[in-house]
Amino acid sequence: MSGPQWIVLVAVLVVVLAALAAALAGRLTLRADDPAGRTPGHPVLLPERPRAADVDLLRL
Image (cartoon, rainbow, N blue to C red; front, side, top):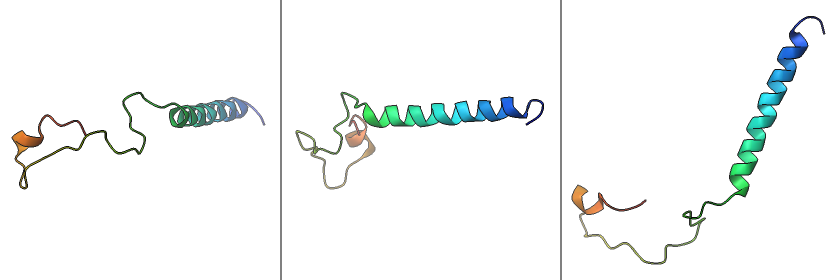
């Protein structure tokens, strides 16, 4: 390759590898507040027809 083409190719390769490493690190690390597919320890009880004020303070 001639000129700056190899520099662009190396830069693109570095960006792709960094994105893959970040995605892999995100999948491997678990957040402490993330239930990771488990059911919550306590059910959330709402009225049959909830209003915005009823669900305003729920953590989803």
